[in-house]
Length: 183
Image (tube, rainbow, N blue to C red):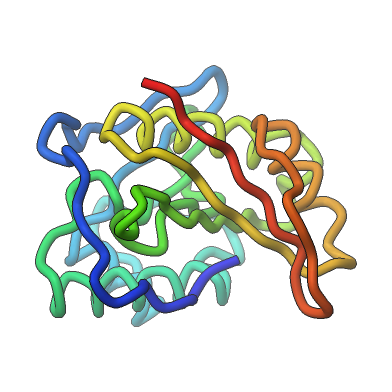
């Protein structure tokens, strides 16, 4: 779900209206990653105050943090269109990541990706986090949210469907989902 390049000419859509605070859902905290936190994830070296579950960061988390760092270097801070750490509220332990592949494209659509540690899968956390991320996109002014998954990754299909995304197509490599956002 992570690591696709952002389309050239991508534009920011009303990003300044969104604060970069941790977002609380019913059972999770979505913490917006900083450059320093992302650098530690890429290095796989926890710093003081980092609370990582066993197995974190996963390969997808490392790829996403690296893509975030490249985007910051190329385009500057993305505001809300960044990577977020999924944390359990009890102790703030990181169990996965979710975020945007970059700012909205010229049509106002953003692409999302997510990953969660195997030990906490099957509990609805990814769908819950994706619903919150869609809310961030809506508040920031994006017009649509896109996601995709391998055809055999039915768990990811269920995550996107549970978050309200509609299956809009597929090819030999990916199943594509989309949600049109209304103000």
